[in-house]
Each structure stands twice: as C-alpha cells, then as structure tokens.
Length: 560
Image (cartoon, rainbow, N blue to C red; front, side, top):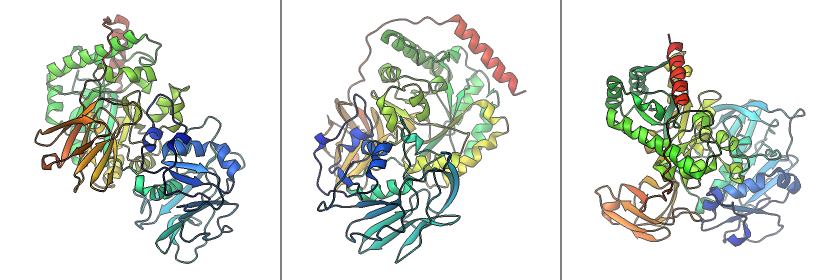
C-alpha cells in the first residue's frame, strides 16, 4: 500500500540529481513531499528501479510502513485485484493493481483500450480508443458498488473508480512495468507504451493536487530539417503549397535551415515566408551540417566558435531576407552533448530542440537521462530543450501523451516524408486540433512557453524552464513568486507587463502585481547569460561546403 503524509518530509532525506536541473529539483520545491508507503510486493517494485525514477519526478517519497497515522493514500499490490480488499480504509484514497506478470517470451503485447467519456478519465484520452503495447494482459475487473469504468479493453473493464464519502478508490488491471537494468522513463512511458503507468500517474496527480504544478497551454508545431531559401521549393517541400495547406488545416511548419546555406537567398522565396509568417518559419540546423557536428570532443573555445559562426550566418540571412529566424538550435541527426548544450545559451540561442531518445543516445553516461520525458521541456546545463518526435510510428499516441504531460507536440521529418503528398500533415494536425484550443507557432514562441505554475491562494508560483518565458497571469492573481531550482538562474528577473511596465527582483521574492501586470506578461532573466570569453575565429571548410552542395543537389533531383 502507499500512504501519503499531509505534512512535509525532511527534504534532506531525498537524494538529488547531481549538477543538472531535472524534475526532481522542481518537485523538491513543493510545499509538501507526499509519503507513499508500499506494503505489498516491495522487493519486486524496489528492484525494478521504477520507485527511484518516480521519486525523481514527483513530489513523493516511497517507504515501507504499517499503520502509519494520517496517511493520505494507499497503493495495494496483490496477486489479483479482485482478491485485494475492496477498501481497507474508506477515508484514505486507494489504488489497487495486480502483481507483476510479463508475457512468457518477454515481448510486449498489443492491446486496444477504449477510454470512457467520463470527466474522471484523464485528458486527453477521455472518450478515445488507443492501441498500444503492454508487458502482460491486464486483469479484467468485476464491477461492484458504485464503481465507474474509466477504461475498457476488448475483454472488459481494466480501470475503474469509486467514490466513498468523497474519497476516491481506484482499481487498475495493469501490473506496473518492471524496469530493465539501466532502464529509463522512456522504456515505460512513450507513444509505444504508456497504459501500465497512466492510471497510477493520474491517481498520484490527484493525491498531490495541493502541490501539483500545471504546465503551459496546448501548443504544437511541425518541423522539417534541411530546407533553405535557395528556391521556392526544396525536394518535396513546396513552401507555397505548405503555407496554403497550413492556413486551411490550421497548423504551423518550422524549417530547420543550415547556416552554411545562407550564402544565397532567393528574394521571391523570402517573400513567401514574410507573407505567411503565421504558417511557416525558420530555425537553426547545426552550422555546417557535418557528421556528429555537435557531439565531437571540442575544446570549449571550438564549441563557442562553431556556435557563434552559426549565429553570424543566420544574422546574414535575416538581413538579406527581412526575416526573423528562431534562435532555437536543432542539432543535425539530434546529436548533441551536454557540453554543447551548456554553450548554446552562451552564444545567443534561446533553446534547443532534440528528441528524448537522441539526448539519451549521445549522453549515455549522464544520470539525468533516466528521467527524461516528464517535464514540459528539459533544462540541461541552463539550456531549455524542447522534445520532438518523428512522423513515423504511432503519432496519435505520441500526441496524446505529450498533451497529458503538458509538452509541446512537435513532429519532425525530412522533405522525403512528403513524397506521397502534403496530406501527411493533415491527419496529425486534425488530431492535435481536436484536443481544444491549440497554439500553433514558431520555435521561439514554443520555447517561451516552457514553464510550470500553480496557485497558492492569490499567489502564483511560476517555475521558468528557460531564461525567457511568456506567461498569462491567472485571473485573481495579486502576487507572483518566481521559483528556480538549485543554482539555475540565480540572477534577478525582470517582469514586463502588456503595456511595458516593469518589475525587477530575485527568484524566491514575492512580486506584488498591480493592474498593469494582468494578462500576458514576459519574464526574463535580467542579466545576459554568462558569455564565453574565447575569441577563436572558425574558418569555413571547403569540404563541408562541397558536401552540402552535393547533398542539396541530390535532394532537389529526388523530387523530379
């Protein structure tokens, strides 16, 4: 069983992540760290590694305890949900689930689940049918009392909830996943596999409601790597066609353009981007786009020289094209090291955009990679990192899970993905737009919507996940506290209201908000990021230029 203490735990008891900002750093700032007492199948769950990962993500602490007073919740793990007591303590929220059982061959099993339209089912899965994978067949739950079904498999109920005197009691037919050795959150929480975790996470979210931080509103964007402004098309990408279809179907497409390509700008193509800024935009794709460009073992001065050269080239493009390019770095092939991420904000970029899988693949020895994928965006060495996913795979599940986790829904591809037609974008756009009011925007705006927040009476507590965020003050807010974890962004913050009024103060201080700070405000670290002092000049490499010309020629020929 899991119990939650209504009084704060001693935060010194927790093991924090070294060096980097993670979900754990933010969860430790909650007013309460909720204690969860596991009483069944302790050994199996502890060995799985799942407990430590959840403690690193949520404002909870798992312990083993019998009869602890004033618990606020119980998790009951038994051989069978049906054989577990229906309610051990009616006044304590409970969550019952079966013990771990995997398929005999260790392979994942396909399963289809229909979520109820009941408001108690989690958004955005409510009322939807999803097909995904699990490690074992779920146990089918026989209904009793006033239990309501939140999810059904083809065989029967797999997630039910009851209310006894205002206290919620949940049963899940899904056993918790066993984490593999060296496993990480993505192994059990991704578009391919999430059903075993979803009921537990939804229940814990309600248990921790008093300290739970909300994420930003729904936001999304599509992205294609490599296209440039040398012509009105690039391979199978036709900018006019995409802009027209984006306006029709309500979406936005960012093109990650290579700074090396800025030697020439086609004026008519630049005009397409100027006219259709609501539908199409540019961000930055490496510098020369050479192999493993942002993962090599550079000296610090070489990293700075590479990134500053990319900025200078992009500034040249902006002058010639009359465009604003988002200062968001999209590493070629998603390959980027922690050291390069640290240099990115020092060289004029606001953020990076990298898939969780690529972050892990190129930073294998870093402990923080285990918990990637929970926050609205990651914050690694002071660099905000937005997630992105391929158009391949189960994009609907990816979209739904990203929305559940308050993450931007960014799907990416290359021009070849449009070989079959621009309709590739219509289906995911319609799924995203079906979720409600969605902000489709360029990468700058997506980056500035990286934060978490919660209300504490009339005080809004805001956790920026970057050096600059744009935030709409909730109605009724009279005070604002900016919270930053660890040693991140200890400098002063500046708040700018809709009419230009400003306030300046340090993180942790309470800002009194007058009427001029109602509505949407901008919050930015008041001092510039620490700049590297190296002044190394990086000379362009002829081989990189020739390689890029050949690659572009190939891409353009493919569309004929």
